[in-house]
Amino acid sequence: MTEKARIRLVDLTTAFDGEVVLDNINLEIKDREFLTLLGPSGCGKTTTLRIIAGFLKPDSGDVFFDNERINEVPPNKRAVNTVFQKYALFTHMNVFENVAFGLRIRKTPEAEIRKRVTDALALAELSGYDKRRVHQLSGGQQQRVAIARAIVNRPKVLLLDEPLGALDLKLRKEMQRELKKIQRTAGITFVYVTHDQEEALTMSDRVVVMNRGKILQIGSPVDIYNEPRCAFVADFIGESNIFSGVMPRDKLVTFAEQDFTCLDGGFAANEEVDVVIRPEDIDVTAPGDGAVSGTVKSIIFMGVHYEITVVGDTGEEWQIHSTDPQTVGDRVGLTLTPDDIHIMHKPASPEEEPVDYDADEEDEDDDD
Amino acid sequence: MTKKLPAIPYVVWMAIFVVAPLVLVVVYALTTPDGQVTLANMLEARKFLGVFGRSFGLALIATVICLILGYPVAYAFSREGERFRSVAMMLIMLPRWMNFLLRTYAWVTIIENTGLLNQVLGFLHLPKLHIINTPAAVVLGMVYDYLPFMILPIYSVIIKLDGSLIEAARDLGADSYRVFTKIIFPLSIPGVISGVTMVFVPSVSTFVISKLLGGGKDMLVGDLIELQFLGGAGAYNPQLGSAVALVMMIIILICMSLMNRFGGGDEEVVLL
Ligand SMILES: Nc1ncnc2c1ncn2[C@@H]1O[C@H](COP(=O)(O)OP(=O)(O)OP(=O)(O)O)[C@@H](O)[C@H]1O
Ligand SMILES: [Mg+2]
Image (cartoon, rainbow over the protein chains, first blue to last red):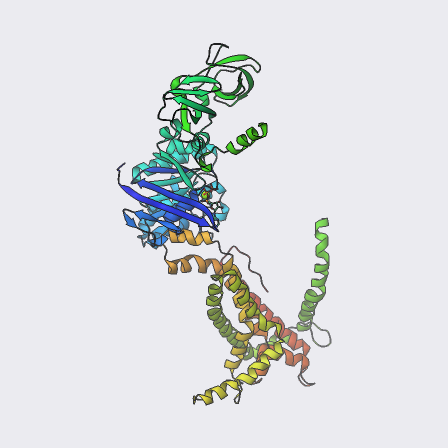
């Protein structure tokens, strides 16, 4: 992966009917990287792709492709192809002609078209479906035609809008591997949209977490997972325990009515903070052994692990993932090491709040 | 089964007003006045080959002109805003709220030798046009009367086109011209087929237009049939009239089914 910027989005802002959908988006997409836009429904992922593809002009801001401003370049003149969220297959053509469309437009020789389309269909596990009409395919097959139709053109940049959403788990995993392989071997820059955090973490070089039209964090999957910048990211990427706390000084945090040593610093003295602890980082021990004592409230078998809820003696709830079962009602201790505790600033704006933050606050208000 | 109940009035209606007349036409066409089954009427209809040829020829010309005029209009309208579209569609349908005879008579006053058109031409010192009582006038009348039937079905197909297909084509490198030829036009063919059907069928069987604008000189199939039923004592021959009608129906059916096959779409085209 080179460090050259293939696409740059600078100060993009877009509103529909006065409602701001993209709010000052700045993003650099590097050549040959696998970049994923991750965020909840309606956060502006598709809108961002549409601006890159050229279907939508931003209200303000610029789009650069290889350092050239392309705001005014129409979609058909951009070296970008899209796998559309709703497939947008040509209903009056068979599968082969759908996939061949881009090549025919470029006046590719017939023999080459035949070869490339056949290869693309094989890759999408659609060999033998060439003559089928689009409406004779299942949703997942249509989705794979959409992927083949875009990939066959070997664009410099491929925009994929939830390209695997309609596939079953097994096929999805298989296609994930295939897409990743194509991206690496063909050296195509992928801008991938998903709201599946696991897909984002496993496939991407970098993940862009969005909410309410804003970019909250850009980073490698490991960074995003281990160092979420705000409660929303922590909450959206995997499950988290998020507690309200105070930092009396660097490397010391108070929450759940106790002091804990942590590794973070750089906060104002006695700043109110959010404390994130991943459920799989907490160890369950004998009562009295851990830093926290509590009672097992519930346990759910999740396949790989058990999801255990423990109510601490000071009233807070802990989510714990463990391979060992516990008995509901038992007293247990919870141990935390300093590197399990991650400190974040309190949300500075609504989009940084976790999804259920509002509800929590309202509850507190009611208690007062 | 009970679900079929609401269809019963419709079925009865169809039986009385569609099937029964058709059966009567067939019966008349295949019998002599005293009730003997015969093919003589059908064979006699052959002598009107010229009339058939003229009818189909003029209807075909009118249909092609309607298509050439109507498609761009339908396409242009479909690209406009919603308010423009509804007003435009109403204006297109407006003349149809006027009586068919009146509409056609209005053209007589425009194109007759001393009519509006020639007065304007004379005023501009241009040579006069002799249109009335020519086949051109008949075609003009057909185009004028049936053009909305071409525009409407094409418009309603284009307006329902999935915009994302156009975006997909653009995304794959197609310019506006290719988007039209490879996506919009092929997908609008069902509309074209219904439009062609809806213009061609009434054009080929019209009798008022040819009588008023064509001067009744060159008889069309419609006039021919009318003559057999409403003509004076000498011409009255409902058996022959039915045979001509039956032949025409068969030819139209063949044309339409060929066209549907040719259109090749999976979409059903309404035969109107
Ligand atoms: N053409 C439009 N007109 C008005 N509002 C729009 C339009 N397109 C998108 N929006 C709004 O913009 C916001 C962002 O939409 P967008 O399609 O980018 O979301 P998304 O992140 O792709 O969501 P999803 O995961 O559900 O596909 C939504 O609130 C949506 O309602
Ligand atoms: Mg979307």
